Image (cartoon, rainbow, N blue to C red; front, side):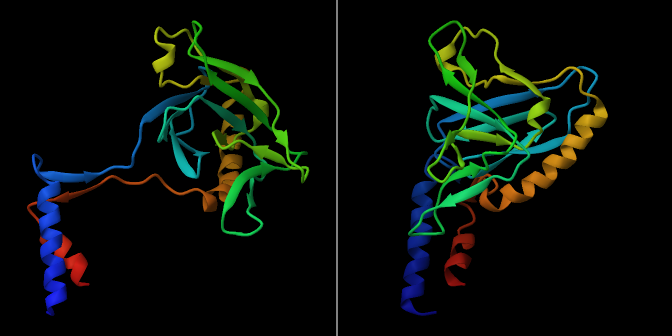
Length: 228
């Protein structure tokens, strides 16, 4: 083993020891400031789908039994909820086709979009249904802070919230309410449609980062990484 590789190993072990002071493990975690929780509210006669997928800022969001969480690196002033089964396509930079500027919809696409903003009133969120802005290329621009949920927009009744005693610190998103007349068969059909719609979105959204930990009592892990 040459002198350079030995020095690299020693530096790795030294850095690991400093990172581990006061703790048995050093943990790497993304710089997350806020975690927001949301829910899909189905009629009482409906069994919620065990799993669906939403999309937010390039990240896939698991919806399990109607519940989901959205993570952000800053306290968000507001969100958009977008419901559509139509193809969502990226608009790339003219000078760098690998850079996505924003996502977009065809103007003929069926959709529902709700803007959800923080408020200082007796409710934590101000909610209104709103159209998407049209770009100069006649496409519909999806705002960056949009939670894209590939579901049939005709099935969504409303997005609403209850009064909250601490509106400025609320991390609970408004509930997504589905129409009462929906049957279980309709929901099952919607799940299949959502799965197919996700095929267009998955390539542009990654899975959430997994928290990694390194045990200071096992420096050989670092050494093996360096010496490969």
